[in-house]
Length: 291
Ligand code: MN
Image 1 (cartoon, rainbow, N blue to C red):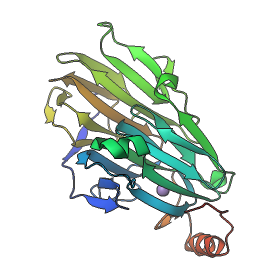
Image 2 (cartoon, rainbow, N blue to C red; image 1 turned 90 degrees about the vertical axis):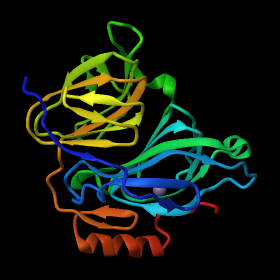
Image 3 (cartoon, rainbow, N blue to C red; image 1 turned 30 degrees about the vertical axis):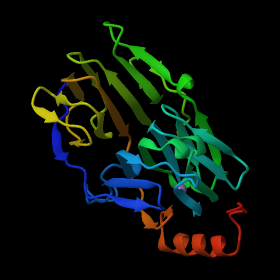
Image 4 (tube, protein in one colour; image 1 turned 60 degrees about the vertical axis):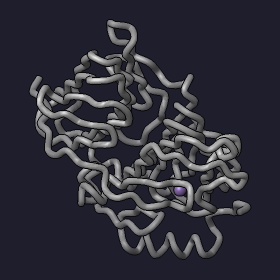
């Protein structure tokens, strides 16, 4: 196998607030600067570790729509309470993953979980927008609440480091998430000094985000906490050496080679479909969700 070549080491771009609860660094499309470079992943908002003060009024983002894609929320610290217009609700606690297929349209709200809010303290999360192939954009919404115990684990021979498989297949260990296009999504939990190597197809768009700790990638690039590596579509093999105990998010997927029309909370293929999305939203066709 050929080594997967590194295109770019990306520092966390300046953060912005989503509502009053999510202080995020937008790695893509913003920092990468191209809406399709990481397709099928359209957006990566990374809430680096941040200490929120205690409050009895949970921070977050109120009722808003989505259409044409999926939101994947991973909690690393703190918890997120979620409600949507299809009646789904739940708490994304530390280590949990929520995979929401907005598809034809949904309203939802995302707030800090109330117990966490009362205590305050470190909060760290990721939200990824996964594009849907055109033929699935208008299918029914769907909701996968993947608790940490539901995720599959591949243990390294040292039996201390492990790969938590959310989606895809890591050396025979299959993740529980259903996906509409081929996607590999893992959290590597590596102990200091351990090394791991794995292959991802050359044509898959691939990046890794260091959530905690620091690593050396492909024996050449030192990557610190909150930094992202974007790989070229060249070569397959990635090797990672942990300099400290660390957590690394791996995102890799087969590109969806279709036109993109993106505006606010909608991700469609054409401008006309965006206009339709706003019309349908304004006409109340996304259902109802109490504020
Ligand atoms: Mn949302």
